[in-house]
Length: 322
Image (cartoon, rainbow, N blue to C red):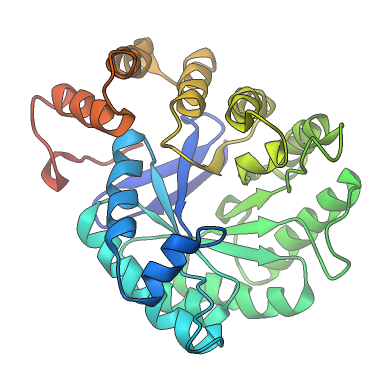
């Protein structure tokens, strides 16, 4: 079975068909978050710090780091984003010991992040666009890291799942030309909003199965895309995640601070036999009981983790994960 290995300084996470679903925390990203964007431009990292700690407490195994702020004082991201990316990565690594997903459309910011990251981060991302392939695949090879491959190319994002599969296959083949194995490619088949395309859910489930069976690659997605524009989005996301997991999806960039969505992931791990003896589900059930009694989700998760580790907390309590 394909395993994609990513590492921090002290922890290893494996993404794979026979491994627990990998939750990649999405919140350290200023896109659509005006308050966070303004804070980052002002040099205020309080929200970044809180989001890093809370996401890990709630079950994020990897943290996505995006520093894509368009500065009012300097709108050129090629100048502003690389040093900001480096700073945010160094800050987050000082707070939590989980692998990172370095997320940018600016190649210089990706390389700045790779230079600052300890361990073996996940690079987000490469597409099938020729210019992007030529810019990113050499970085992947140079730093020996896995990469998210997004299934769009120079023609844009196709609504035809066969075309999206063909783009993914092209990226895998081009990566092989650079000496990058398929185990280091995590394909994002692109989840369309079900509110705009009624068949979006069925499309992505079928695509994930093909990517697993025909290319043997791990997969990821922006899980909340499926519910865009609809009411009660978290209910849709919570239904989507276990269905995607059953189809073979092995990770998602998502919000781990949402109890309903994390409950769906924990339940899916149990049902897929990726939770030995149901130990993780039993621990999470205690978290839900505490939340029902009025405790905050992050606080309850932190308390449950402390109890499970015999009262130890902080970086010293963390261990390597298979």
